[in-house]
Length: 92
Image 1 (tube, rainbow, N blue to C red):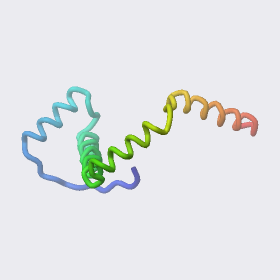
Image 2 (cartoon, one colour):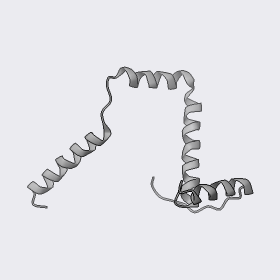
Image 3 (spheres, helix red, strand yellow):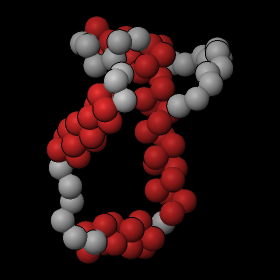
Image 4 (tube, rainbow, N blue to C red):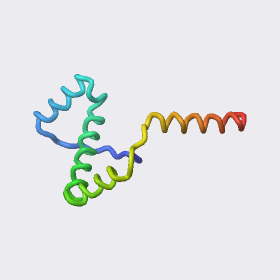
């Protein structure tokens, strides 16, 4: 995510209680994490809104029409094996 900047905000008590309940339930490990997730969701929503439904649908269809997806776990396992083998070959 990059550099971080500390800020202070004032929120309605109800929102703070909601965030604290999420933390108590284990949904987030800290208030910072809960607020960051909320801001990231806001950023995604704003991106979708600016993009517009037609362009968003076009991007989705482009992905659907591009062929079958890849299993992420398999891809990462293959990459890890590849780079571990390269490191072993270098004696690392």
